Length: 180
Image (cartoon, rainbow, N blue to C red; front, top):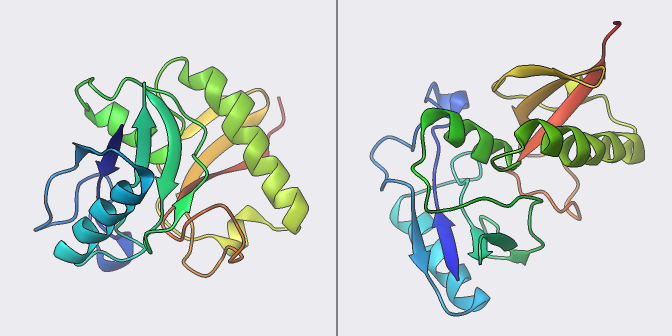
């Protein structure tokens, strides 16, 4: 079992969200035996590097390349984000962006369309939210998929309800329809 330890710059403080936070340890994986140990390792990493909700993007726990859990900024063990990838691959710039979105590697288009987009649509419909007035953050990129423009934005700290499965630092897919 491996846990991802990762940070990103906070755009609210003019830092690059595509890079680890300045002065912080590089993003890496640690082998752990239990989810409880993963939680402790994550909390220690967060404390050592003075991370907050806008900087913590790690915590995904992998077993056989399947994400089985996610550790929040507070150390809480949560259900996993939908993704599967080979964690031994080199992390190129493109992969860093896809990992941040929480969708995984190939086939990325299909996963975004089928998993991320449906999840975002259901979330916004359930909570009757407009993605453009309840979220702030940095735009990672647009991609036209199945009649939607898909946008990935960092969620504002207090925009999500406390019982949400998303941590304050989680990145969520937003969408809007476009005419074809």
